[in-house]
Amino acid sequence: MNRVRVGVASGALGSLIVGASVPVTGMLQGYPLLSGQALRYGLGGVVLLGWVLARGGRLPVPRGRDWVALSALVGLGMLGFNACVLYAQRYAEPGFVAAVLGASPLVLALVAPLVAGRRPALGAVVGAVFVVGGVVVLSGGGSWRGPGLVLAVLTMLGEASFTLFAVGVVRRMGGVAVATWCCFLAAGAGGVLGTFVGGWQVPTVREGVALVVLAVVVTAVAFGLWYFAVGRLGADRAGVLIGLMPVAGLGAAVVLGAQGLTVVGVVGAVAVAAGCVIGLRRSGASPAGAERAGAGRAGAGRAGAERAGAGRAGAEQAAAERAGAGQTGAAGAGVGSAGQPSTGAGPTDEPPTASLPEGTDIPAVRR
Image: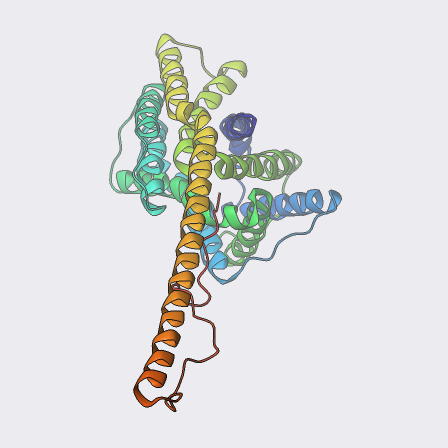
């Protein structure tokens, strides 16, 4: 239960940090997009690597299939997502983009279990529906023109891919390692692309502060917290916490005086909170369920081992009896018919083999 609570707290804090950083991101409107992302992610990767080394650990090196997942995550969930957000707002109102983006928890609740080979959990799906409704209410909807709808949908898919492509890699390498490698890959790709598109320029003091805050707080801290939560909760249940991002954005706007708090905003925030509670409720019982399932599998394994042992013992005893009977019959036939021992081939001295093939083992119980 404590592990689940820590996972929920990590995911919620990471989402709140990202949502509240919207005003900071606005400080980079005049800075080249790709080169700015390269600086942000490069510094964030250095901070994460320093954290790993300071704790006496080492950074795991991704394997072949991990590189594919990380590359897809960076291309779609980081650089692609940021580009789609930027261009979508040129053809659609921000509220419309936010409303479509709010559907990503539902996509995760439906797709993540299917990718893992299981059916979607009802609690996660229902919670995601509440979150989507709350985000739509918060954003107020809006209009679009031209490719605005397509770009908004691509933005939502990019947000979902940021989590989906990380599930297997987080399981093998850990959340901090995944966040670190993602930052370095995004910094390299953004730096190369930024050299040809947008170029480089020295940031102003205001832009420099924004880049440092985004790199340290939003990238290093929030990314690490989010992937930690995905590893503890699963992508489908952690996905409902994405709804906290627009809630945090609303709170930051109210605190900064950019907008007032309305009844509609409160209703949307309450719906998002209810969706998070519903979507995460069953995850609290999942560790116990996993323990019960593991105990059941262990008990079944022990029982199977006992039955297999009894079967092998019975087979050996029966084989020994058949061998003894064969020897007696052969001896009796040789003496009774010819009056002297038989010259035919007798039984060998090799012990009887067990009924199971050699090398058969009881499968180990995996948690």
